[in-house]
Structures are given as C-alpha cells and as structure tokens.
Length: 133
Image (cartoon, rainbow, N blue to C red; front, side, top):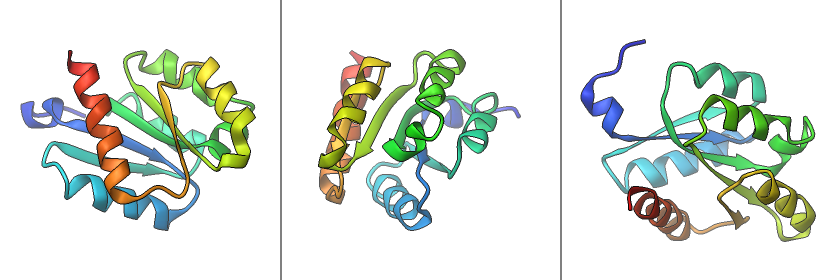
C-alpha cells in the first residue's frame, strides 16, 4: 500500500479493544479533535499485527485485556514491528499489576478506565508533543 505525504505526516492511531463501541467513541473523540489523527480498530492481536506492515502507527491504545490474552507477547510483537510506536494501555484500577507489567514491557503510559473524552484527547496531545521534541 502506497501512502501520500498527508497520510505519512498524520498520526495514525491503532485502537486495540474488544469493544466496538469503545473503539468508535475513541475514534470520534480523536479524529474530530485533530485533523491529523486517523484511527484504526482491531479487536484481536492477529488483526492488529496484520495492519503494521502497511500503516505507520504513531500510537497504539491497547485495552489491557488484549495484551493479557497472549501473556503480553503482543506487546513484544508491536515493539519489534514498529519500535517507535507509542503504546498506551487502558485498564481498570483493579488491574494495577497488569499495568505494571505492560509498563515494564515498554508501554509509554496508561490511563484508567473509564476515561473522559477530554482526558483522552489531552493524553494523546501530550504524547504527541513529547514525541516531537
């Protein structure tokens, strides 16, 4: 797949979540917030990894349950496929140990679910700024 300059310059975000409703909410929140954001959804690790060869992702917003399914092997696969991709994990407060594990394996950050749309936008904006400096 060939990308235009616009596609290469925008921030592609992979939303890795088993829930379509969550993915659609995140997509609307991020794409309507900034013209440069384009979101993609995957609801399993195979689907997620199939996107990496064709799409240069800036961010992965991963539901912790998606990483737990394969004992965090997906985290390792993402880093090997796209070492510059920023992985941010979404989890519930009760999943602190899994958040810690994801951070140890290379996640750049996390957020506690449920998250307000404004907080999600700020989180991505903050990581965008720190990645460009």
